[in-house]
Image (cartoon, rainbow, N blue to C red):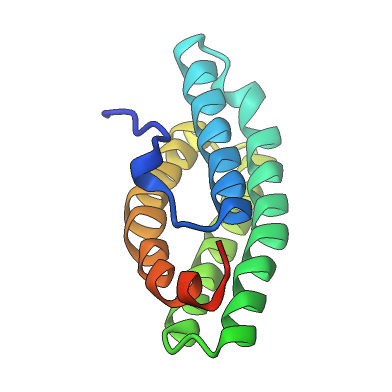
Length: 135
C-alpha cells in the first residue's frame, strides 16, 4: 500500500481543520510504523481511541461551520462522518473482542478515508468557506 503523506496540496484552506487533518495523518503514520515493527496489535487500541476522539472534536467543528454558513452539501457530508463513526466503533469492538488483523483493517480504513474523504469531500467546502472569511 502506498502511504499517503500530508502536503500543502491537501489543505482545505481552513487552518484549524488542516491541523486536525494533520493529526489524522500522524495517527496513520504511527499505526503504519507499529505494523512495520510487528507491534500493530499493541498500537491499534490507542489509534482507534484517537480516531474516536478525532471524530468527536473534528466533525463537530466542521459541522458547526457548515451550519453557520449554510453549506449546501452539509447533509451528505455528515452522512460520511456518521459512517466514519460507525466504522471506528466496529473496529474498536473487534479489537476489544480479540479479533486478529484489526490493525491492518484500521490502516486500510484510514488510508481510504484520507484519500476519499479528506482529499475529495473535504476539499469541496473550501470554495464555500473561504469567501465567507473562514480560512
